[in-house]
Image 1 (cartoon, rainbow, N blue to C red):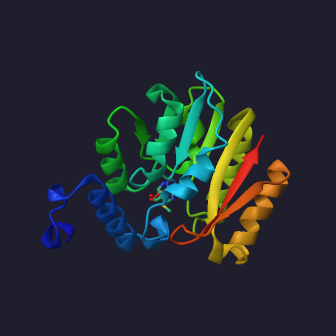
Image 2 (tube, rainbow, N blue to C red; image 1 turned 135 degrees about the vertical axis):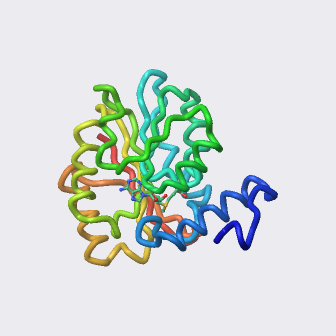
Length: 202
Ligand SMILES: C[S@@+](CC[C@H](N)C(=O)[O-])C[C@H]1O[C@@H](n2cnc3c(N)ncnc32)[C@H](O)[C@@H]1O
């Protein structure tokens, strides 16, 4: 259907990303959750606390079209230390084409430790749609982050403002507090939609 209404090969890279994301979100609303990729202010707020240790792995959960990947990779600067997980076939194909040197796997977030070769990671950066995911997958992902994040490591994520007080939004924040004792937060109002960035330090 995309091919019928728009030839994205003729578009600029940002326009291609926009169309790819928008279309994937329309096709898979419960998986993608929002019509727009994360904006740079929210991404910067998530990436700023990520420690840069040359030998440590960094994990991205829910790569999408790579809005976070670009800034995260600029910070870590070593393609061998990155692994990104993404469930959506079209998104992962797009991301792999955009970042040929990075490793992306088509697997669900809770399985990320399989790709660390037995090592701990120094950061987990996630834009997963926590409040739309099945509860067991949310809890399994948080458990795995707790288990596989190195001491001093950072887990950075966000919730959109309008889900903060929903039952699923509250359950997610409580689940973080139970496992990590709490989080720092920053509201990014200019994101579309506005988000609350959550930073957990282990
Ligand atoms: C809100 S989008 C964010 C995409 C991109 N990182 C960004 O910031 O613009 C959420 C992404 O998570 C992916 N996703 C949803 N559930 C997932 C899961 N269980 N494991 C891995 N990826 C998942 C979706 O396909 C989608 O690409």
